[in-house]
Amino acid sequence: MNNKLKHSPTTIINKAFHVDFKGYSPFEVDLFLDEIMQDYRLMATIQKQYEDEIALLKANNLKFQERLIQLESQLATLKDTPSNSDLLKRLARLESLIDQKD
Image 1 (cartoon, rainbow, N blue to C red):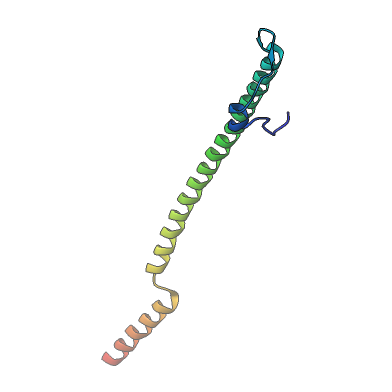
Image 2: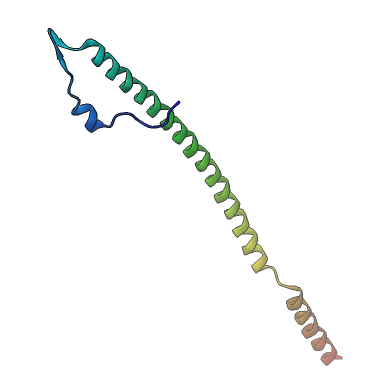
């Protein structure tokens, strides 16, 4: 299937049909309407593809947002947890206080 539209809104509005003895050529009008129908089907297919892609991207975005929240929470927990060096410094300070009392 060709993914290029044959008509734009301007070409549809400006389309001039040749007049036969009793009016417009039925064959030409039918051919033009068939092309428009194909364009609409193509547009519906393209729109469906974009809608599917948007849904997938939204789902991925939601997963990434949830993961970001989880990682930020873990980071905050790690920042609040004293490091080993902080614990060793505190222990050394307490030991020095105990040694001073003895």
